[in-house]
Image (cartoon, rainbow, N blue to C red):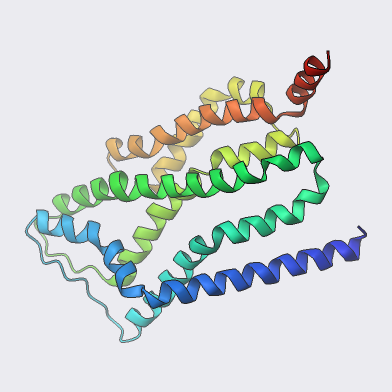
Amino acid sequence: MGFMEHLEELRKRIIWSIVYIAAGFCVVYWWHDQVFAWMQAPIVFALKNHNQPVNLVYTNPTDPFNMYLKISLIVGIFVASPFVLYQVWAFIAPGLYKSERRYVAPFMCSTVGLFMSGGYFAYKMVYPAALDFLIDYSKQFTPMITINEYTSLFMTIVLGLGVIFEMPILIFFLALFGIVSPGWMWRNFRYSILVIFIIAAVITPTTDIMNMCIFAAPMIVLYLGSIGVAWLVHPKNRKKREAKSKG
């Protein structure tokens, strides 16, 4: 394919991705009340647990409408993500060897699975613990939490950890093209831990060490797992395995 053909292929994949995202947005917006009730459950539980009023507030008449649009778009992107990821893979697949194209199914499943695992971990473990700490710390005051502030905090925590759980996918591509190696990752493990704790300190909404460790622990496990991923797909190791199989 020439340069213009590549651009035409890219344009087609982008258009299809936009169509899938628009469809996901429409589906989620149809159920926006149920989606927000699910999002609101952690703060309702934390407020009830500390005998605080559970109603969230808004300061502008347009806030609820804009919030529903925002969460419908973000959740709609997630709903459409398998189809969008397929478009990404379909665009880069022609540049790979036939033996490498077999990674499409594991790529799709692992990408969506890791993101869901990160979001579920945040929703069930990290976010409730952070909210409980924050509400308890401020129990001498009466909370007046707006729907926009709460939605932003929710998205930051849940989507942030969902993206962080994609670390093995990032390492997969970097190692596949020989940019990083498992040996390099292992030699720089101590520096990686420092970076991980810095990221955890930035993402966590609280200042206590326990919540920061809750964020950092799965990231360290993912980093160690990513070393194994890098070993499997790095060009040097693939060539060694191919040579042994031929021998």
